[in-house]
Amino acid sequence: MAGPGDAFVRAVRLHRDRVPEGEDQQYPWSLPAVRALADTVELHAELTLLVGANASGKSTVLEAMAVASGLNPEGGSSNFSFATRASHSPLADALTLIRGARRPRTDFFLRAESVFTMASYLEELPQDPLASYGGRSLHEQSHGESFLSIAMHRLGPQGLYFLDEPEAALSFEGQLALLLRMHDLAQTGAQWIVATHSPVLAAYPAARILLCDDAGLTPIAYDDVPVVRDLRRFLQDPERQVSLLLAER
Image 1 (cartoon, rainbow, N blue to C red):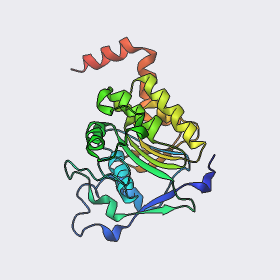
Image 2 (image 1 turned 90 degrees about the horizontal axis):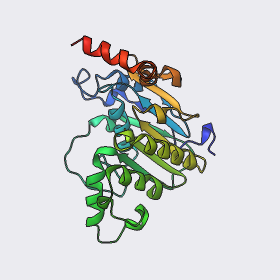
Image 3 (image 1 turned 135 degrees about the vertical axis):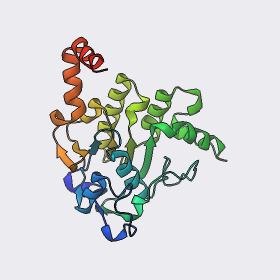
Image 4 (image 1 turned 30 degrees about the vertical axis):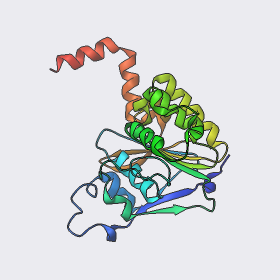
């Protein structure tokens, strides 16, 4: 198991002097989570979670970190080169990843929305890469099955992994399976950086949880994660919560 000083990426920092002149009030530079990177943000050697509402900047920050580490913006490893649309932000060029002494044996950027495109890319390669993905075409599996196939077969020990909202592809049981896989690989030296809305993934015991909101990037405990707090309140009395919601219409 990796110790606190054994992270592949120990911290991330934004260089304000690399922000294009006159654009500091525009996306992505205007996001509080991005501005917070001007102060060095430390990462956990096992798992760092970026949580927060939609449009809070967690996926923007995660994507920029993945690209800054050399990964394909649309997903895959550093060897992947497919692109369907130039949609990623310029933030990666303004980031510095502060690396540890170790170097990852492998890496991957896994995005729930790009698994289909990645599967097509794999099938177009001249060599047969499917052995690294469970030996079965990802197109012949459901969205959740293909996502878990990548996690179970392609992601291995001592890897650096970025996951963007993996719960979008997974059932509750699938999220539990992913949590277990993340833990198993962390014990063999893997490091995970994940943007998520999932209370299941946020429950990882050793995780450093960073809340993306108007205050920037704030370390918080599991019980203070907004989705955890709100889901608990909802499940305590779902009928009442739905009635209150409908009464507001």
